[in-house]
Amino acid sequence: MARLLVINFSILGFAFCVLNAFGADIACITDGCQIYSNYTIFGFSVYFYGAAGFALIAITGLLFPRGRTAHALFVLLVALMVAGDALFLIYQYFYWFCMSCMVVAALIGLIGLAALSVSAHLRSKWFYSIFSIWAFFFFVATFGLIKEIFLTPIPSYGSKEALVQIYVSPSCPACKTLALNVLQRPELLQQSAFYLVPKSDDDSLLIAGFYQDVATGATEKMALETLFSNPLRVSETAITSEQRFIEQVNTMAMARIGAKSIPVVIAPGLIFEPSTPSVNSISPTPSFLQGILQQAPPTNAVGFSAGCSFQQNSTDSADCNEN
Image (tube, rainbow, N blue to C red; front, side):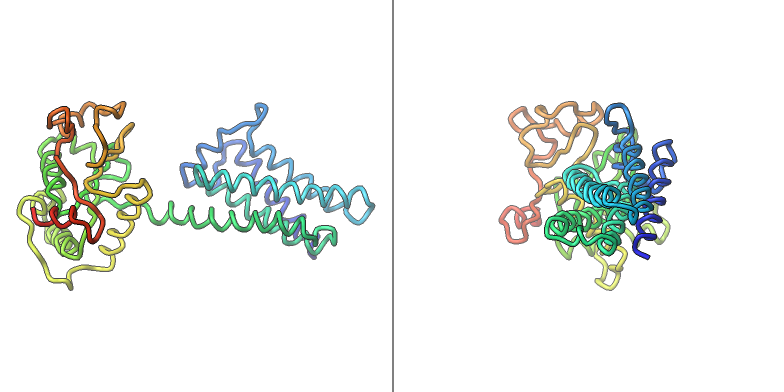
């Protein structure tokens, strides 16, 4: 039964790799998939090497009972596949996560588990060590993939595909300056998405007011203008679980890029927050952002003199909330 499982998983892996090598893009739902699908070794797609590995394991699995050579090849191929995939999982950990690659990894892991029952030679410390490394990075990559797919930031205004991503908080004066400036510039606004991030529970109440305005008929642009020009506090019961979820994933998105203060502007060639030394040193900066990010003297080349810290007990944060 274990040998049949090895053969069947290998056939599935072979078919999956061949189809993806020819552009089927099965399970390709992350940016990493598109990147890795173009990777080649000696001019051949990495999927062709995966297909070859699965095919050889299936063949040696069929020949396994017939001699020592087939047995040795089977053990060697399984070990190499698991070890090679462990290295690629480590690569994913440092670079991009890939859904279709994780499907291949899962099949390799299942083959490795089933192969333990097929060959006593694999039930040894050296293979358990290799498989443990594979398992650790498989679960790390799986959690990273889940985070990328299901915990992506959610804009309150604009599209996820917008060229410019702007993270702002209602109680931050610098955010107010930035938000109202962008809202008054249609050529920039149409290329922007606003992500609302609370620094405190009071901010969550203000953001709840934004969602209430939208629910009662205001456009998202009008609701943002109200939020930053004339904020209204609402009762805590108006904060929904959906709003809490959006706030958390947006905050996590900021944490992933290492932002410690707000506002944050992300655009091609630019990740800008108030602690950035000077926007002049960041290149290339989109021309339509220059007017907003370079309104101050050269010694303080920020369109707003200071941002707000996310540190709960910092003096910086307290001063920010008072303004």
